[in-house]
Length: 423
Image: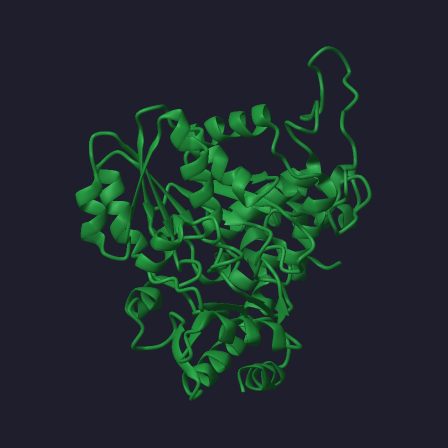
């Protein structure tokens, strides 16, 4: 390995470190250690490079370029509470630490925490609150948090107020002295509504409320809510970050040291943590996030255009259309528009939608999203079944709505599959 392979500014900044290392080890080891140091400093990296390298470094004991799977529950101590940073894997595991560092770097955050699922991460945020506190949440969001908020946490005295967060005035008028959290999902699942994160952040800051943004649909490749003023970013890591439909996981990212300590205490005490194997799989998945997202976006654009021009399709919900309701906001805060979309047929009979759902051959009928394979979904009976029908209809989620997670297969094959299914 030659020193020329390292970023020159970093070498210049660390000449003293290099001189100190050389007398005690070979030039090769010195360069190796400098590279390790370099990979823990992400500010000089462009996004695609950061996705591959941020938060991870060669294993110091072997030089393995991939983070090892530390499949252990406990750690030997030299004396009571004398250890090497780890004592029990519920509190911390080296593989999880590497992942949490990577997740933080992807969202331009100072801290990252990994949880056993997206719902577990959401639970961690709500546990910051106390009885009597109020939460403002989007009325068009994934059914999981709605079920979680309305069926569990409301019984503990936390009040949830649902409103159209795409209209900033709606958020402003719901603020009270008891508002402690604003929960925003953008783009929303499944209607692709877009909320101005920066505008909501300003309201939250003025009201001394936390803003948590569910960034699952966009992924860190397309949107960074911390940069726009969010206090916490939540991800269902299961989706685009994992990217291969083989892991269930959630994550929180934040800048505040105090907030991190509170959430870490919740994570450690409640124990909803991912295992090291799952952390390894996500670390591997993240390394191709940028390549995958580029293809998701390319295919999404083509499939959305096809659906909009189909004579049997009534409406296509995709935030990349220039005449879409939230297009200007999406264009301002996102790098591209992604591969998530929903559509309705002109035949609004549920049977017509079910016929399409059963007829696809490449699009698999399944829960979840964000994997390399394309999925098709019926929100009314699957992902959003927990939301009362009258609420769904009021928010625009019809019984015949079909949601697509456009994968990274050949776009022509995906279009042909939809063509034969729709007829």
